[in-house]
Length: 485
Image (tube, rainbow, N blue to C red; front, side):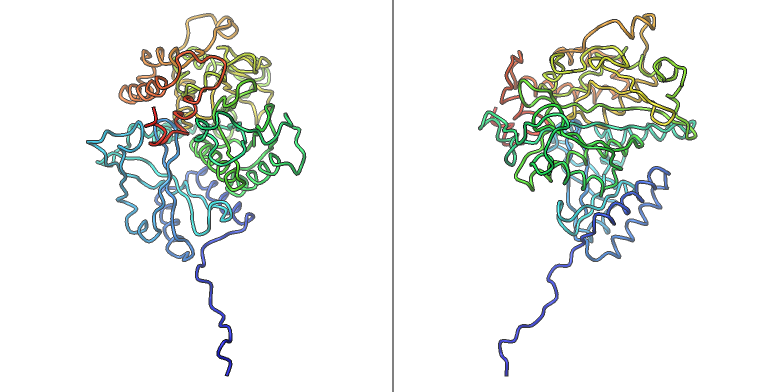
């Protein structure tokens, strides 16, 4: 008798893991549903049925974004979520810029169309991700949730006359040696480059190129519709471009882009950083935002014989952005560190003007054709709240007050954006238009938390990056770091 004969047991865990090719197909199909505005209840029923049938899913990651633009994630057990999707709550008083302690409970509604399958080797097997919408206790949209605000505005434009807002972002980041390099900066006093190759120049097998390749694979699998990727100008800097899409999807993809880059980097014992200017003496990180409007499949910003190849409607949009540039600067550059980037010595777009060729201009008019004609707002940092920023661009460009200056003068006269957060706070707080844009309560709350961050940092920036502007940055700080002040 063979007492020690081995017994074949089934795997103890059988969690969902899908090939990258299949992930891309599934995520692109859901993206197409969003673009074609499939009814939310149809998407909800389809997703909930899928979750009920797919036994290999253990948890659903629900994401939301706070007022400053930081992504938050909660993992719900799948069975619990299916039973309780209409009654999810969380403690808003623990989220900076949200509710006060005495009114802490907030609701979290699932935006079922905004559903993603995740690469199991990066995010772990058995999970899917969906975006949530923050609601007040009574179920009304929470004023501090700018995603809901952007979604409602984009839908309003579409319902009015079929206008679709198309956005494409160019998001730059740095790759540093070691995990959690930003939260350890106050201890180390430096960031360590992993490559000094520079613009477009990186050997196929070096660490930066391997990171870009791995992150681009994840990005493609999640339905971004990749275009090109490359090392950027500064050492250890990268950029991975993808196609334009509808405004809310574009803002979601900004959050996912930063999330997947950080996770891929951590898996390689590295840190992906989207601080606007983490290192003195080299170019900073931008998030150039390309904008166009379409109606009935026609690009409203294209005009072959128009000035710089764009239409009068596009120039009207630009003029309104320029007229309100100082008032909205804090929204686009919302941290102490972001004002270091607006330095003309490093190709920074700090001039309140529009140009087809001047890369120091706040707005650039890129070469385009009937399909690609657009405007490019360059004076926005990657740490901006993407929903607030895109909502601001659209509302300002379509409805913002216009300058009474002659057009030729206001487009070419050189004025400058604020070069520090205090000078950006003043016009933001005083702006009647910003009050109408965000609501006076959100305007005041955003200014309050930005001032609190600023007052923990040196008022005069000086030439060197200070530990405080990193450790108290809204994408870096946590309770432990905040309480070290």
